[in-house]
Length: 508
Image (cartoon, rainbow, N blue to C red; front, side, top):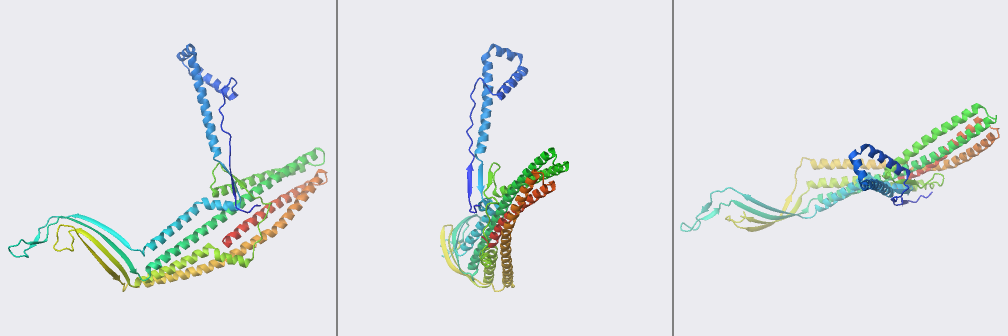
Protein backbone atom coordinates (compact mmCIF):
# COMPACT_ATOMS: atom_id res chain seq x y z
CA UNK A 1 0.00 0.00 0.00
CA UNK A 2 1.17 3.47 -0.76
CA UNK A 3 0.80 5.57 2.39
CA UNK A 4 1.88 8.84 0.83
CA UNK A 5 -0.78 11.42 0.16
CA UNK A 6 -1.86 11.68 -3.41
CA UNK A 7 -4.88 12.31 -5.56
CA UNK A 8 -5.22 11.30 -9.17
CA UNK A 9 -7.87 12.89 -11.37
CA UNK A 10 -8.82 11.69 -14.79
CA UNK A 11 -11.46 13.44 -16.81
CA UNK A 12 -13.85 11.16 -18.63
CA UNK A 13 -13.54 11.58 -22.37
CA UNK A 14 -16.42 10.82 -24.67
CA UNK A 15 -16.47 11.05 -28.47
CA UNK A 16 -18.26 14.06 -29.92
CA UNK A 17 -21.82 13.39 -31.00
CA UNK A 18 -22.30 12.64 -34.67
CA UNK A 19 -25.31 13.61 -36.74
CA UNK A 20 -26.59 10.67 -38.82
CA UNK A 21 -26.61 11.44 -42.51
CA UNK A 22 -29.88 11.23 -44.44
CA UNK A 23 -30.04 8.05 -46.48
CA UNK A 24 -32.58 5.85 -48.12
CA UNK A 25 -32.01 3.10 -45.56
CA UNK A 26 -33.08 4.55 -42.22
CA UNK A 27 -32.84 2.65 -38.92
CA UNK A 28 -35.81 0.78 -37.56
CA UNK A 29 -36.68 3.45 -34.99
CA UNK A 30 -36.82 6.03 -37.82
CA UNK A 31 -39.24 3.82 -39.74
CA UNK A 32 -41.41 3.52 -36.65
CA UNK A 33 -41.52 7.28 -36.37
CA UNK A 34 -42.48 7.59 -40.04
CA UNK A 35 -45.31 5.04 -39.63
CA UNK A 36 -46.55 6.82 -36.52
CA UNK A 37 -46.43 10.14 -38.35
CA UNK A 38 -48.39 8.67 -41.30
CA UNK A 39 -51.09 7.40 -38.96
CA UNK A 40 -51.25 10.78 -37.29
CA UNK A 41 -51.68 12.59 -40.58
CA UNK A 42 -54.27 10.07 -41.74
CA UNK A 43 -56.40 10.68 -38.65
CA UNK A 44 -55.82 14.34 -37.90
CA UNK A 45 -55.46 15.85 -41.39
CA UNK A 46 -58.73 17.37 -42.67
CA UNK A 47 -59.96 16.59 -46.23
CA UNK A 48 -59.15 20.11 -47.43
CA UNK A 49 -55.56 19.79 -46.31
CA UNK A 50 -55.32 16.39 -47.97
CA UNK A 51 -56.55 17.77 -51.25
CA UNK A 52 -54.15 20.68 -51.04
CA UNK A 53 -51.21 18.35 -50.48
CA UNK A 54 -52.27 16.14 -53.40
CA UNK A 55 -52.46 19.16 -55.68
CA UNK A 56 -49.12 20.52 -54.37
CA UNK A 57 -46.83 17.58 -53.54
CA UNK A 58 -43.91 19.92 -52.91
CA UNK A 59 -45.72 21.18 -49.81
CA UNK A 60 -45.97 17.64 -48.44
CA UNK A 61 -42.29 17.07 -49.09
CA UNK A 62 -41.41 20.29 -47.36
CA UNK A 63 -43.48 19.44 -44.28
CA UNK A 64 -41.95 16.00 -43.98
CA UNK A 65 -38.48 17.38 -44.37
CA UNK A 66 -39.07 19.96 -41.68
CA UNK A 67 -40.35 17.31 -39.28
CA UNK A 68 -37.31 15.15 -39.98
CA UNK A 69 -34.94 18.08 -39.42
CA UNK A 70 -36.66 18.96 -36.13
CA UNK A 71 -36.44 15.35 -34.95
CA UNK A 72 -32.73 15.13 -35.79
CA UNK A 73 -31.99 18.49 -34.16
CA UNK A 74 -33.66 17.31 -30.95
CA UNK A 75 -31.60 14.12 -30.97
CA UNK A 76 -28.40 16.09 -31.49
CA UNK A 77 -29.28 18.46 -28.64
CA UNK A 78 -29.90 15.55 -26.27
CA UNK A 79 -26.59 13.97 -27.24
CA UNK A 80 -24.76 17.25 -26.64
CA UNK A 81 -26.30 17.66 -23.18
CA UNK A 82 -25.41 14.08 -22.24
CA UNK A 83 -21.86 14.53 -23.52
CA UNK A 84 -21.39 17.77 -21.56
CA UNK A 85 -22.60 16.15 -18.34
CA UNK A 86 -20.29 13.17 -18.84
CA UNK A 87 -17.30 15.36 -19.68
CA UNK A 88 -17.65 17.23 -16.36
CA UNK A 89 -17.45 13.99 -14.35
CA UNK A 90 -14.16 13.11 -12.66
CA UNK A 91 -12.49 9.89 -11.55
CA UNK A 92 -10.88 10.56 -8.17
CA UNK A 93 -8.37 8.06 -6.82
CA UNK A 94 -7.10 8.76 -3.32
CA UNK A 95 -5.59 7.17 -0.26
CA UNK A 96 -6.27 7.85 3.42
CA UNK A 97 -4.02 10.92 3.66
CA UNK A 98 -5.41 12.42 0.47
CA UNK A 99 -8.94 11.83 1.73
CA UNK A 100 -8.10 13.61 4.98
CA UNK A 101 -6.65 16.64 3.19
CA UNK A 102 -9.57 16.85 0.77
CA UNK A 103 -12.08 16.78 3.62
CA UNK A 104 -10.19 19.60 5.34
CA UNK A 105 -10.20 21.60 2.10
CA UNK A 106 -13.93 21.25 1.35
CA UNK A 107 -15.52 20.89 4.79
CA UNK A 108 -17.92 23.61 5.89
CA UNK A 109 -16.75 23.09 9.46
CA UNK A 110 -13.19 23.94 8.42
CA UNK A 111 -14.42 27.07 6.67
CA UNK A 112 -16.33 28.08 9.80
CA UNK A 113 -13.19 27.64 11.92
CA UNK A 114 -11.21 29.76 9.47
CA UNK A 115 -13.86 32.48 9.68
CA UNK A 116 -13.59 32.48 13.49
CA UNK A 117 -9.82 32.92 13.24
CA UNK A 118 -10.36 35.81 10.84
CA UNK A 119 -12.74 37.43 13.33
CA UNK A 120 -10.16 37.01 16.12
CA UNK A 121 -7.55 38.73 13.95
CA UNK A 122 -9.95 41.61 13.41
CA UNK A 123 -10.34 41.95 17.20
CA UNK A 124 -6.54 42.12 17.49
CA UNK A 125 -6.47 44.95 14.97
CA UNK A 126 -9.20 46.77 16.90
CA UNK A 127 -7.27 46.41 20.15
CA UNK A 128 -4.10 47.73 18.52
CA UNK A 129 -6.02 50.74 17.21
CA UNK A 130 -6.80 51.84 20.77
CA UNK A 131 -3.19 53.00 21.27
CA UNK A 132 -3.33 55.31 18.25
CA UNK A 133 -4.70 58.87 18.26
CA UNK A 134 -8.35 59.40 17.42
CA UNK A 135 -9.35 62.25 15.07
CA UNK A 136 -12.95 63.37 14.62
CA UNK A 137 -14.43 66.09 12.39
CA UNK A 138 -17.77 67.80 13.03
CA UNK A 139 -19.98 70.19 11.09
CA UNK A 140 -23.31 71.74 12.12
CA UNK A 141 -25.77 74.23 10.76
CA UNK A 142 -28.81 75.51 12.65
CA UNK A 143 -31.74 77.81 11.99
CA UNK A 144 -32.94 79.73 15.05
CA UNK A 145 -35.84 82.02 15.77
CA UNK A 146 -35.36 85.76 15.74
CA UNK A 147 -34.75 87.52 19.10
CA UNK A 148 -34.29 91.16 20.06
CA UNK A 149 -30.75 92.39 19.84
CA UNK A 150 -28.98 93.55 22.97
CA UNK A 151 -26.87 96.70 22.56
CA UNK A 152 -24.97 98.84 25.09
CA UNK A 153 -23.82 102.50 24.52
CA UNK A 154 -20.21 101.92 25.48
CA UNK A 155 -18.76 104.96 23.62
CA UNK A 156 -21.09 107.54 25.11
CA UNK A 157 -24.45 108.95 24.26
CA UNK A 158 -23.34 110.48 20.98
CA UNK A 159 -21.87 107.22 19.61
CA UNK A 160 -23.99 104.39 18.31
CA UNK A 161 -24.55 101.53 20.79
CA UNK A 162 -22.44 98.38 20.57
CA UNK A 163 -24.43 95.23 19.82
CA UNK A 164 -23.50 92.64 22.42
CA UNK A 165 -26.00 89.91 21.44
CA UNK A 166 -26.99 90.29 17.79
CA UNK A 167 -30.03 88.64 16.23
CA UNK A 168 -28.35 85.81 14.30
CA UNK A 169 -30.91 83.37 12.92
CA UNK A 170 -28.53 80.97 11.08
CA UNK A 171 -25.39 79.55 12.69
CA UNK A 172 -22.59 77.47 11.19
CA UNK A 173 -19.85 75.52 12.95
CA UNK A 174 -17.16 73.04 11.96
CA UNK A 175 -14.16 71.64 13.75
CA UNK A 176 -11.54 68.92 14.12
CA UNK A 177 -10.71 67.23 17.43
CA UNK A 178 -7.76 64.90 18.11
CA UNK A 179 -7.21 62.84 21.28
CA UNK A 180 -4.30 60.66 22.33
CA UNK A 181 -4.21 58.51 25.46
CA UNK A 182 -0.90 59.04 27.23
CA UNK A 183 -1.40 56.74 30.20
CA UNK A 184 -4.19 54.25 30.92
CA UNK A 185 -2.80 52.32 33.84
CA UNK A 186 -1.94 49.37 31.60
CA UNK A 187 -5.49 48.89 30.26
CA UNK A 188 -4.56 49.33 26.59
CA UNK A 189 -1.58 46.99 26.63
CA UNK A 190 -3.58 44.40 28.61
CA UNK A 191 -6.42 44.58 26.11
CA UNK A 192 -4.02 44.08 23.22
CA UNK A 193 -2.47 41.06 24.93
CA UNK A 194 -5.89 39.60 25.71
CA UNK A 195 -6.93 39.87 22.05
CA UNK A 196 -3.76 38.07 20.99
CA UNK A 197 -4.35 35.29 23.50
CA UNK A 198 -7.91 34.97 22.21
CA UNK A 199 -6.51 34.65 18.70
CA UNK A 200 -4.15 31.90 19.84
CA UNK A 201 -7.02 30.06 21.51
CA UNK A 202 -9.20 30.37 18.42
CA UNK A 203 -6.39 29.17 16.19
CA UNK A 204 -5.81 26.19 18.48
CA UNK A 205 -9.54 25.39 18.35
CA UNK A 206 -9.32 25.49 14.57
CA UNK A 207 -6.36 23.09 14.64
CA UNK A 208 -8.38 20.78 16.87
CA UNK A 209 -11.34 20.89 14.47
CA UNK A 210 -9.09 20.12 11.51
CA UNK A 211 -7.48 17.22 13.38
CA UNK A 212 -10.92 15.81 14.15
CA UNK A 213 -11.90 16.17 10.49
CA UNK A 214 -8.77 14.35 9.37
CA UNK A 215 -9.47 11.53 11.81
CA UNK A 216 -13.08 11.30 10.65
CA UNK A 217 -11.95 11.14 7.02
CA UNK A 218 -9.36 8.44 7.71
CA UNK A 219 -11.85 6.35 9.68
CA UNK A 220 -14.44 6.69 6.92
CA UNK A 221 -11.81 5.77 4.32
CA UNK A 222 -10.68 2.60 6.08
CA UNK A 223 -14.27 1.68 6.82
CA UNK A 224 -14.98 1.90 3.09
CA UNK A 225 -11.88 -0.19 2.32
CA UNK A 226 -12.97 -2.80 4.88
CA UNK A 227 -16.51 -2.88 3.50
CA UNK A 228 -15.19 -3.30 -0.03
CA UNK A 229 -12.95 -6.18 1.08
CA UNK A 230 -15.91 -7.73 2.89
CA UNK A 231 -17.95 -7.58 -0.29
CA UNK A 232 -15.20 -9.37 -2.20
CA UNK A 233 -14.98 -12.03 0.53
CA UNK A 234 -18.74 -12.54 0.48
CA UNK A 235 -18.65 -12.90 -3.31
CA UNK A 236 -15.89 -15.52 -3.05
CA UNK A 237 -17.92 -17.34 -0.41
CA UNK A 238 -20.93 -17.38 -2.72
CA UNK A 239 -18.81 -18.78 -5.57
CA UNK A 240 -17.58 -21.60 -3.31
CA UNK A 241 -21.15 -22.33 -2.28
CA UNK A 242 -22.16 -22.47 -5.94
CA UNK A 243 -19.36 -24.95 -6.68
CA UNK A 244 -20.42 -27.05 -3.70
CA UNK A 245 -24.01 -27.07 -4.90
CA UNK A 246 -22.96 -28.06 -8.42
CA UNK A 247 -20.73 -30.87 -7.16
CA UNK A 248 -23.42 -32.12 -4.80
CA UNK A 249 -25.94 -32.32 -7.64
CA UNK A 250 -23.44 -34.28 -9.72
CA UNK A 251 -22.78 -36.67 -6.83
CA UNK A 252 -26.51 -37.07 -6.26
CA UNK A 253 -27.00 -37.97 -9.92
CA UNK A 254 -24.17 -40.48 -9.60
CA UNK A 255 -25.72 -42.03 -6.50
CA UNK A 256 -22.87 -40.91 -4.24
CA UNK A 257 -24.90 -38.40 -2.22
CA UNK A 258 -28.32 -38.27 -0.62
CA UNK A 259 -31.01 -35.62 -0.91
CA UNK A 260 -30.16 -34.29 2.55
CA UNK A 261 -26.73 -33.35 1.22
CA UNK A 262 -28.33 -31.45 -1.64
CA UNK A 263 -30.62 -29.57 0.73
CA UNK A 264 -27.65 -28.67 2.93
CA UNK A 265 -25.75 -27.35 -0.12
CA UNK A 266 -28.76 -25.35 -1.22
CA UNK A 267 -29.11 -23.88 2.27
CA UNK A 268 -25.43 -22.96 2.25
CA UNK A 269 -25.81 -21.28 -1.16
CA UNK A 270 -28.85 -19.28 -0.01
CA UNK A 271 -27.03 -18.13 3.12
CA UNK A 272 -24.09 -17.04 0.98
CA UNK A 273 -26.44 -14.96 -1.18
CA UNK A 274 -27.77 -13.27 1.97
CA UNK A 275 -24.20 -12.48 3.06
CA UNK A 276 -23.44 -10.99 -0.36
CA UNK A 277 -26.50 -8.75 -0.13
CA UNK A 278 -25.54 -7.56 3.34
CA UNK A 279 -21.94 -6.98 2.35
CA UNK A 280 -23.06 -5.02 -0.70
CA UNK A 281 -25.27 -2.85 1.50
CA UNK A 282 -22.45 -2.18 3.95
CA UNK A 283 -20.08 -1.28 1.11
CA UNK A 284 -22.59 1.10 -0.46
CA UNK A 285 -23.29 2.79 2.87
CA UNK A 286 -19.59 3.15 3.74
CA UNK A 287 -18.83 4.60 0.31
CA UNK A 288 -21.77 6.99 0.61
CA UNK A 289 -20.48 8.28 3.96
CA UNK A 290 -17.02 8.82 2.49
CA UNK A 291 -18.42 10.55 -0.60
CA UNK A 292 -20.50 12.82 1.65
CA UNK A 293 -17.40 13.87 3.59
CA UNK A 294 -15.51 14.49 0.35
CA UNK A 295 -18.44 16.45 -1.16
CA UNK A 296 -18.22 14.51 -4.42
CA UNK A 297 -20.70 15.11 -7.21
CA UNK A 298 -23.14 12.48 -8.43
CA UNK A 299 -21.17 11.97 -11.63
CA UNK A 300 -17.76 11.65 -9.92
CA UNK A 301 -16.22 8.21 -9.57
CA UNK A 302 -14.35 7.37 -6.36
CA UNK A 303 -11.49 4.86 -6.43
CA UNK A 304 -9.82 3.66 -3.23
CA UNK A 305 -6.06 3.32 -3.61
CA UNK A 306 -5.56 0.83 -0.77
CA UNK A 307 -6.29 -2.87 -0.31
CA UNK A 308 -6.13 -4.55 3.06
CA UNK A 309 -4.00 -7.44 1.87
CA UNK A 310 -1.09 -5.36 0.59
CA UNK A 311 0.64 -3.74 3.58
CA UNK A 312 0.33 -2.77 7.22
CA UNK A 313 1.00 0.39 9.24
CA UNK A 314 4.42 0.85 10.75
CA UNK A 315 4.94 -0.25 14.36
CA UNK A 316 4.46 2.57 16.89
CA UNK A 317 7.46 4.30 18.41
CA UNK A 318 8.54 4.70 22.00
CA UNK A 319 5.66 5.47 24.36
CA UNK A 320 7.47 8.17 26.32
CA UNK A 321 8.46 10.04 23.18
CA UNK A 322 4.93 9.80 21.78
CA UNK A 323 3.50 11.21 25.00
CA UNK A 324 5.99 14.08 25.03
CA UNK A 325 5.11 14.92 21.44
CA UNK A 326 1.41 14.82 22.26
CA UNK A 327 1.77 17.12 25.27
CA UNK A 328 3.71 19.58 23.12
CA UNK A 329 1.50 19.55 20.04
CA UNK A 330 -2.07 18.69 21.02
CA UNK A 331 -4.23 21.72 20.13
CA UNK A 332 -6.58 21.12 23.06
CA UNK A 333 -3.80 21.86 25.54
CA UNK A 334 -2.70 24.91 23.56
CA UNK A 335 -6.25 26.26 23.54
CA UNK A 336 -6.60 25.91 27.33
CA UNK A 337 -3.23 27.63 27.90
CA UNK A 338 -4.20 30.52 25.60
CA UNK A 339 -7.56 30.94 27.34
CA UNK A 340 -5.81 31.12 30.71
CA UNK A 341 -3.38 33.75 29.40
CA UNK A 342 -6.29 35.78 28.05
CA UNK A 343 -7.95 35.77 31.48
CA UNK A 344 -4.69 36.94 33.08
CA UNK A 345 -4.50 39.85 30.64
CA UNK A 346 -8.11 40.78 31.35
CA UNK A 347 -7.35 40.77 35.08
CA UNK A 348 -4.67 43.39 34.42
CA UNK A 349 -7.13 45.44 32.36
CA UNK A 350 -9.71 45.31 35.15
CA UNK A 351 -7.21 46.44 37.78
CA UNK A 352 -6.15 49.31 35.50
CA UNK A 353 -9.55 50.91 36.05
CA UNK A 354 -8.48 51.80 39.57
CA UNK A 355 -5.41 53.65 38.32
CA UNK A 356 -5.30 57.23 37.00
CA UNK A 357 -5.48 57.95 33.28
CA UNK A 358 -4.12 60.81 31.23
CA UNK A 359 -4.98 61.93 27.70
CA UNK A 360 -3.95 64.74 25.36
CA UNK A 361 -6.67 66.63 23.45
CA UNK A 362 -6.42 69.26 20.70
CA UNK A 363 -9.25 70.99 18.86
CA UNK A 364 -9.65 73.53 16.07
CA UNK A 365 -13.02 75.27 15.46
CA UNK A 366 -14.35 77.42 12.65
CA UNK A 367 -17.75 78.95 13.38
CA UNK A 368 -20.15 81.68 12.39
CA UNK A 369 -20.52 83.14 14.94
CA UNK A 370 -17.65 81.85 17.05
CA UNK A 371 -18.73 81.80 20.71
CA UNK A 372 -15.20 82.61 21.88
CA UNK A 373 -15.24 86.00 20.15
CA UNK A 374 -16.87 88.90 22.03
CA UNK A 375 -19.03 90.54 21.14
CA UNK A 376 -20.70 88.01 18.88
CA UNK A 377 -20.68 88.82 15.18
CA UNK A 378 -22.30 87.14 12.19
CA UNK A 379 -18.97 86.31 10.57
CA UNK A 380 -16.52 83.40 10.26
CA UNK A 381 -13.83 83.09 12.96
CA UNK A 382 -11.57 80.23 13.96
CA UNK A 383 -10.10 79.18 17.30
CA UNK A 384 -8.08 76.32 18.74
CA UNK A 385 -7.27 74.65 22.05
CA UNK A 386 -4.74 72.13 23.39
CA UNK A 387 -4.98 70.49 26.80
CA UNK A 388 -4.54 67.51 29.05
CA UNK A 389 -7.38 65.44 30.53
CA UNK A 390 -6.77 63.36 33.66
CA UNK A 391 -9.10 60.97 35.39
CA UNK A 392 -9.05 58.71 38.42
CA UNK A 393 -11.83 56.51 39.74
CA UNK A 394 -11.55 56.85 43.50
CA UNK A 395 -14.40 54.51 44.44
CA UNK A 396 -16.37 52.03 42.33
CA UNK A 397 -18.03 50.01 45.06
CA UNK A 398 -15.50 47.17 44.81
CA UNK A 399 -16.41 46.26 41.23
CA UNK A 400 -12.81 46.20 39.94
CA UNK A 401 -11.65 43.94 42.77
CA UNK A 402 -14.59 41.59 42.20
CA UNK A 403 -13.91 41.36 38.49
CA UNK A 404 -10.23 40.65 39.18
CA UNK A 405 -11.16 37.91 41.65
CA UNK A 406 -13.45 36.32 39.07
CA UNK A 407 -10.64 36.38 36.53
CA UNK A 408 -8.23 34.73 38.96
CA UNK A 409 -10.77 32.00 39.72
CA UNK A 410 -11.22 31.38 36.02
CA UNK A 411 -7.45 31.06 35.60
CA UNK A 412 -7.28 28.47 38.35
CA UNK A 413 -10.12 26.51 36.75
CA UNK A 414 -8.41 26.52 33.37
CA UNK A 415 -5.12 25.45 34.95
CA UNK A 416 -6.84 22.45 36.54
CA UNK A 417 -8.63 21.64 33.29
CA UNK A 418 -5.35 21.68 31.43
CA UNK A 419 -3.75 19.31 33.92
CA UNK A 420 -6.68 16.94 33.56
CA UNK A 421 -6.54 17.25 29.78
CA UNK A 422 -2.83 16.46 29.83
CA UNK A 423 -3.54 13.33 31.86
CA UNK A 424 -6.20 12.24 29.35
CA UNK A 425 -3.89 12.97 26.42
CA UNK A 426 -1.17 10.76 27.90
CA UNK A 427 -3.73 8.02 28.46
CA UNK A 428 -5.10 8.37 24.91
CA UNK A 429 -1.61 7.96 23.49
CA UNK A 430 -0.92 4.91 25.64
CA UNK A 431 -4.20 3.19 24.72
CA UNK A 432 -3.93 4.06 21.02
CA UNK A 433 -0.38 2.74 20.89
CA UNK A 434 -1.49 -0.45 22.62
CA UNK A 435 -4.30 -0.89 20.09
CA UNK A 436 -1.83 -0.63 17.20
CA UNK A 437 0.51 -3.16 18.78
CA UNK A 438 -2.34 -5.54 19.51
CA UNK A 439 -3.74 -5.27 15.98
CA UNK A 440 -0.32 -5.90 14.43
CA UNK A 441 0.18 -8.93 16.66
CA UNK A 442 -3.21 -10.30 15.63
CA UNK A 443 -2.47 -9.94 11.93
CA UNK A 444 0.02 -12.83 11.96
CA UNK A 445 -2.43 -15.12 13.73
CA UNK A 446 -5.27 -14.12 11.42
CA UNK A 447 -3.13 -14.77 8.34
CA UNK A 448 -2.16 -18.20 9.67
CA UNK A 449 -5.79 -19.03 10.40
CA UNK A 450 -6.78 -17.98 6.91
CA UNK A 451 -4.06 -20.09 5.32
CA UNK A 452 -5.08 -23.14 7.37
CA UNK A 453 -8.77 -22.65 6.58
CA UNK A 454 -7.98 -22.29 2.87
CA UNK A 455 -6.00 -25.52 2.85
CA UNK A 456 -8.71 -27.35 4.80
CA UNK A 457 -11.39 -26.17 2.37
CA UNK A 458 -9.27 -27.33 -0.58
CA UNK A 459 -8.63 -30.74 0.99
CA UNK A 460 -12.29 -31.17 1.88
CA UNK A 461 -13.29 -30.27 -1.67
CA UNK A 462 -10.96 -32.92 -3.06
CA UNK A 463 -12.36 -35.52 -0.63
CA UNK A 464 -15.89 -34.47 -1.50
CA UNK A 465 -15.26 -34.80 -5.22
CA UNK A 466 -13.87 -38.27 -4.58
CA UNK A 467 -16.94 -39.15 -2.55
CA UNK A 468 -15.01 -39.49 0.71
CA UNK A 469 -16.00 -36.31 2.56
CA UNK A 470 -19.39 -35.82 4.16
CA UNK A 471 -21.51 -32.74 3.60
CA UNK A 472 -21.00 -31.73 7.24
CA UNK A 473 -17.24 -31.69 6.66
CA UNK A 474 -17.61 -29.49 3.57
CA UNK A 475 -19.98 -27.06 5.27
CA UNK A 476 -17.67 -26.76 8.29
CA UNK A 477 -14.66 -26.14 6.04
CA UNK A 478 -16.42 -23.41 4.08
CA UNK A 479 -17.77 -21.81 7.26
CA UNK A 480 -14.29 -21.79 8.79
CA UNK A 481 -12.82 -20.25 5.63
CA UNK A 482 -15.49 -17.53 5.54
CA UNK A 483 -14.89 -16.71 9.20
CA UNK A 484 -11.12 -16.65 8.65
CA UNK A 485 -11.48 -14.29 5.70
CA UNK A 486 -13.67 -11.89 7.65
CA UNK A 487 -11.32 -12.09 10.64
CA UNK A 488 -8.33 -11.30 8.45
CA UNK A 489 -10.14 -8.31 6.92
CA UNK A 490 -11.27 -7.02 10.31
CA UNK A 491 -7.83 -7.37 11.92
CA UNK A 492 -6.05 -5.54 9.10
CA UNK A 493 -8.63 -2.77 8.98
CA UNK A 494 -8.45 -2.46 12.77
CA UNK A 495 -4.68 -1.99 12.51
CA UNK A 496 -5.07 0.94 10.10
CA UNK A 497 -7.88 2.47 12.16
CA UNK A 498 -5.78 2.15 15.34
CA UNK A 499 -2.86 3.81 13.54
CA UNK A 500 -5.14 6.71 12.55
CA UNK A 501 -6.33 7.11 16.14
CA UNK A 502 -2.73 7.08 17.39
CA UNK A 503 -1.85 9.75 14.87
CA UNK A 504 -4.71 11.90 16.19
CA UNK A 505 -3.76 11.21 19.80
CA UNK A 506 -0.20 12.39 19.21
CA UNK A 507 -1.52 15.55 17.52
CA UNK A 508 -0.09 14.97 14.04
